[in-house]
Structure formats: C-alpha cells, structure tokens
Amino acid sequence: MNLMEINNLDKSFGGLSALLDFNFRIAENELVGLIGPNGAGKTTVFNLITGVYKPDRGSIMFRGENLAGLAPYTICAKGVARTFQNIRLFNDLSVLDNVKISTHKDVPYGLMSAILRTPGFFRGEEEIEKEALKYLELFNLKEKKDELAKNLPYGEQRRIEIVRALATRPLLLILDEPAAGMNPQETQELMGLIRHIRDEFNLTILLIEHDMSLVMGVCERLYVLDYGQIIAEGTPAEIRSNKRVIEAYLGEDVE
Amino acid sequence: MQKVKNKWIKIGSEVLILASLFTLVQYLITAGLLNQYYQINLTSMCINVILAVSLSLINGFTGQLSLGHAGFMAVGAYVSVIITNMLDLPFIVGILVACLAAGLAGFIIGVPTLRLKGDYLAIATLAFGEIIRVTLQNIDYVNGPAGIMGITKLTTWPWLFGGTVLTVLVIVNLVNSSYGRAIVSIREDEIASELMGINTTKYKVLAFVIGAMFAGLGGAFYAHYFYIIKPETFNFLKSFDILVMVVLGGLGSTTGAIIAAVFITALTAALQSFPAIRMILYALILVIVMIYRPQGLMGNKELSIKIFGRIWSGRNEPDGNK
Image (cartoon, helix red, strand yellow):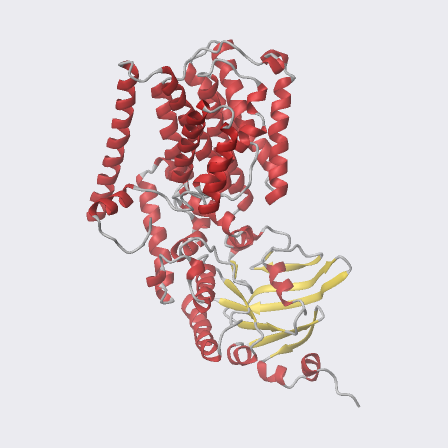
C-alpha cells in the first residue's frame, strides 16, 4: 500500500517554476531517494510535503488525507518528520531538551498542571525524560545529554537532527542531505544507521542526497529531478544506466 | 527516594527563605524602622520585578521583541482603579479583573502582531502601546490626560510580596515544563520548532497573554500605591525601562531579570541625590555593564540555591545543569 502519493504538484516562486507536475509515490516501509543536480527542486519537494510552502496545485495524499495546505505542526502530528539540509538544532538548549521538544505534541499534562506542579506534572516529566533518553541511548548520545547542541561536533549534530525527528514518532521520515559534510567513513556508518532505524522503527524513509555511493547503496527506488520535473524513476541499477540522467548530470554529448 | 527527599529539602529551604524575608520586612514596617523613603523604593522594586519577569517571558524566553509592556501595565492600572475607586469593590476583585483585562488586551494585540518578526514586531507592539495610552487620554470617564487622582492606597507589603512571588512562581514553573520548552524552541528556531510539531503561533500568543496579565498586576499595584495615574506615566519610555531590566539581566534568565530590576530601582533611587548628572551616570553604568557583560548579568543561566551551596562548600563540581 502506498503511504504517500503526490499528484500533479506545482510550485512557482514569482515567475520561476520550481516544481512542475510532480508525481510521486512511496510504499510503506520503503526507502526512496530523491536525487538531481543543484537547484533541481529537491528541497522544494520536502518543503511542500512538510508544509513550509503551500503548493499552487496538486495533492499530497498521506494515509488517505490531503496534506496540501496544512500547517507544518499539523503535518508533523499526522506522522511526517524531517531533518534539515543546514542543521537547525535548538542551539542554546541541551541535547536532551532538543529531543524532549519533539515529544511536546503528545504532552501528557496540561498547562495548569505545569504551573501548579501537580503530581501529574512530575509523572509526565519523568515519562518525557525516559522517552527522550531512550532515543539518545539508541544513537549512543546519552553521555552528551547535558551538552549544549551548539557545542557538539558536526557529525553528532547531524545525528541529533535525526534523533529529534524520530522522537516525534513519525511514520514517514524525510532526510535532507543527511551525509552533507561527512567523510567517506562517516557516510558508511550513516548508511548502516539509516537501514537500522528503518527496521527498528518500522519506518518509511525518503531522502535527498548528493553522495551517490550512499544513494545507490541504501535506496530501493530513486526519483531523479531536473529543472523541477521528474526525468527518471526506477531502481538504482536502472537509474545508473538511464541516458537522460547521465545527460542531466554530465551534460549531452556533442556530435 | 534520595531524589524525592532532595526535592522536599529544596522546596522547604525556599519556603523558609521567602517566609523569613516576608516576616523581616513586615516587622521592620510595623516597628516603624523602615521609613517612607525605603518603603517607596521597596514597592518600586517589587513592581519592577513583576514587570521585568513578565516581560522576560515574552522577550527573553519566547524571543519576541515587545515594546508595549507599559500599555498592558496601563490597562491593569486603570481597570483596577475603576473597580476599586469608582465601583467600590474590594482590591482583590480589582486585581483579578485588571489581570484579565490586560491579558485580553495582550490577546487582541498578540494575535495580529505576533505574525511579524523582529524589528517589525517591535514597531507594531510599540504602536499598540501608544494606542492604549492615547485612547486613555481621550476617555472622559477616566479624566483623559489629567488622569485619576486620590486613589486609595491599598498596595501593602503582604499584597506586594504575594504578587511578586506568584508572578515569579508561575513564570518559572511555566518555563520549566514541556510548555516552556516549546516556548523556548520558538526563540531558538521558529521553523524547526513548527516542524517538530509545535504550534508556534499558539505558544507565542500564550506567552504574550501571560506576560500581559502580570504586567496588569504590576499596573494595579502601581496605581494603588502612588495615589495618581496619568496616561503619560505609561508611555513608551516606561516600556523601555522594563526592557532595559530584561536585557541587563540577561535574555532568558528569570533570576537575571529579578536582579536587574532590583539593581536598576536601587540605582535610580541612589542617583536621586545627584539630580544634575543622574541620567548621565545611569546611562554610563548601563554602557559599562553592556560592554563587560553583553549577554546580560546572568546570560541565560539561572541563579539557584545549589550554586550557593557549591560556593559555601568550596567544592568545584563539574559545570553541569545550573
């Protein structure tokens, strides 16, 4: 069954058409990659799915509901979470608080309970703490829980972005260039991690990536975007030998 | 179990400190040891603490630059005086209605303006604060620009103390909860916050309304201590005064706001003996503090009994959660 189905999605900024007639589907538990040259419109797709932008036309069906035009926090509550191409952690907060914030949409106590410090508040806080620590433990970040997010090395910040997205308990996890700025060895580790979280959390994952070794190694199906349009779709092997894709990346042969 | 025991020891010691502070001042007042001059300054301090702490929720924790705090204070002051002086109802009713009215004003102003960011929000809130003031100037029922005189002095030390403690307690409890984390995440990165499931508009308005309510409380106390209120008292310079306290104390620190409010009130009082150079000295001290502590006196850290404990015991524990 398809978890998400996008039909005829259009988005333009002023006169510039960033995305034209975009069609896309992703099945439950699938691991799909979205690739394409710089400026092809990949991040625009992510911003449309997560509600940062409103589409001009088209529908984004997610488990039978149209997400097009909903507010980002509503989309998150329905089970779509993402990371960012340029890390956007809550810099001046601790790693633990960064993760705790993701659990707020299911906060187990009311505002009055927090102000009056009722027993329900303490129970709820304990629950939240346990939950957040559980995620940090899975990613070997538990010892860093009290560090400020901004003080961590780059690779760990990238991992916390993933943890923070996971803590919203999504069904669909969207990763925007998770390997950006990583060395080959870190990229290898990341590949293992992505597969691991897919299986561990029974997730569906959609990712944008420039690192072809990662994309080809981890994705089951690929979409190739160029100038706002899908130019190819298929398994990594099919994409590798697709003439239009090679042209988009390397340019046409001059005969 | 140890954790639970520590919690009660902490609460117990805090209650003890507050109770002794209250009793001490109450004794000094009834025994006539605290003269009028000190009592006025003490009242100003409490009111400024209420105003600074409530503004720090909006500016420091939510990260929304508001310059209209004096406007909410004006709403609280006028509404409370109408209730007590003109309708002859008890002070507690005046306080409650003042808070509700100021909170409502915060809601009405917050919903449209909180879509704006940074400088634009600052200008919009500044404008709304002025609208409140000019509106009051044109209402004959409250004597327009002349203001209301002969307000009964109802703000006593128990009221002030209770109000200040309540303000600090509510805001500290709010900030140190899941709701507070949601609010702070807006300051840190609004887009990321929204995408992690936080309804940022709702929480910005919530912080704004709670901040406005306590500004209303400050206004009610002010009106019932200083005998006279005029629209001019609540102009934008008053808003700036409160903002200076919040920035000086450190954005995102409640204890910082308290310390700065007490410090600035004391400084203003102390400088009254040099009327000619008062404002120069005041400005100079602010400039010096800002040069040496650009993040404010406390930064975004909080001062707690734990830190004193560490200083007393002379141990240097690793720098953890303060």
